[in-house]
Length: 455
Image 1: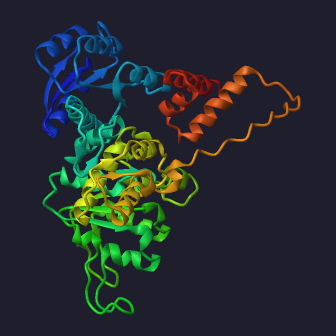
Image 2 (image 1 turned 45 degrees about the vertical axis):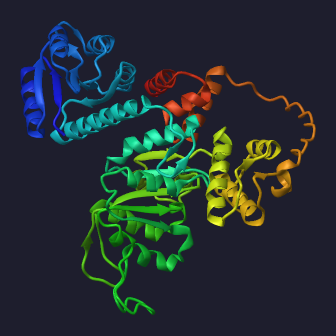
């Protein structure tokens, strides 16, 4: 992707090296040696990225970053520094930098960082454009206008054109396969095949054959060559549902397939190459599975490029009745029934139920009503009795006994334990840990830097 890159570097040799790299990448580059010159160029030459040296003759890179942000420039900022300390990184990120590169750096390091920054900028621009659109009540087979679903729609639109792997999480029945199909249909691969494979529904000894196929005679019952899901999805999308159920030995083979883009059918000797986009899904806590050693960390990072979390039905507000009426109309048409709507009592019961089985449970209930009854309105008598039962009363909590007196720890020790525990819980994700502790992420960065300095 050709881009405009502003290089801010006052050392001539460093500038010439960077300009040569950028030219080799195919980017258009302009060079500034001072803060003032950089601001002048940025004002007259809209750029996509700015590479900023921190030490400049008339100021610092941090001052330049603040000035660019104040002027409303939307370019991604990448800091280049000889001081790659944690404090520098923290200050750079707080100043709005996408990433920072330590000098001396390799051409490959510069390319990877710049490519990632430009791709992130492109996705953000597409997401903002999608946010400007009016809310939709339906989208590629989805029914729902809630804010939670609008966010899902926007993410699908943003990621569809990319080749990046997508990892969909959510409770059973929330529509993970529907989301995968929507990504495929909204993508340039829409004319190619969409192949869905449920890893939990296939015996472990047959999973490799189901994904990669087999040749005649590979095992008992293999009476002919058979193409697996990877081959069937060539030019399209392969959706691996319930990937958390995949055994470890198969995870290794899938990782190799993702790295090389080739596979060998069971019993075969010749590797085959395919062009497939992978979308994975699970209803498990996949990070917990990684921490427990049941899911390979390297495979997780290969698949977990763009995450999408499907919201449970209980968090979708008025979508419950939208879906119920959609299913009522659909099934009534299929079954030749005359239902038009729900009466007031039935609608209220459907709206307040938590639906632990999510959309799939609601769908089954409405289908049952339509199959067994008929009439213009769905009434209380047609719905399951549990929808009208009052929620169980919770027993009054017993007062917990006061804890036995023990040693009192210094506040600094308590604070450090809380921060480290939050980081461990979130997989060292500082922003998420900060959200759990209700503090600013910069607070955690400062604490980490201080502890590291203290040894």
